[in-house]
Length: 314
Ligand code: GDP
Ligand code: ZN
Image (tube, rainbow, N blue to C red):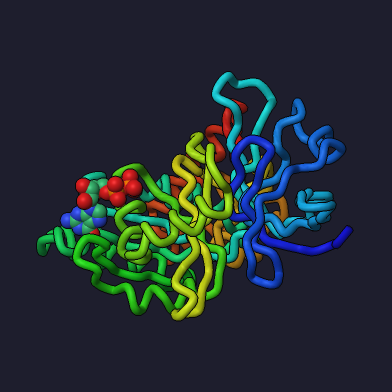
């Protein structure tokens, strides 16, 4: 029996493709006792997990999951309490923003950023489809930059289609576990194709490791980046709106809006909700234009959802 550690690249059913610490790939089965801890014996292992592996004879087993730095879950569509962990240990998120086809809203971005803030996941705002934008749209792009650059969010401008801006992008993703997020149609698959021109090679590598029968639908998968450029992994998990299971309320939401948190230190009441309290530093900053109106609208939107009890961050 040999004990090892590895990184989970892909899961289908109870089988996972794992890159072992020596760099080799293996297909490992999730141990029964570990499955019981999952919901209704579904596979509790997610891509991005660091796992302990036991090799018995010729078979590899996943025996434990190392503690996660963060994770994203998808709640089952039937509104039951069941959920599934899609990916873990994300180092950075590329949040795609497009100004047309489709148009991304401030609200969507702010909600995403606030959950990432709650879980300490760095986010890069990735403006894609730069080749499409006319002067009016470039002007709007400047508005986005004026809001988010001072908050410390890196802003990158690329064209996945024309493969522009990719060298600079590499500086943010090299050697990391990278989650691609954003609306459908913003160019996530196009970026994967642009960054991984050897898709066939990669597919071949995977199928050799797995043998046959690996054509079932995967929930999410890590695509290895070019080792020669420093490696790393891309995860494309469509439809992700945020991290973890944290619930925001009217007293903690502002903690996850960076500028509200800092400016809010100056409010008269330390449980200020920044809505109608006297001596509110956030409202004052809003009036003076030091807080963007769109950010405040997003903030109120989250508080409003909270009031109606419908806002959940998963
Ligand atoms: P996904 O749903 O986020 O994976 O988006 P896709 O990668 O499938 O892209 C959706 C559509 O946008 C496709 O028709 C792409 O060709 C197009 N697209 C993606 N990136 C760009 C880009 O940089 N410029 C332009 N003009 N079109 C793009
Ligand atoms: Zn306040």
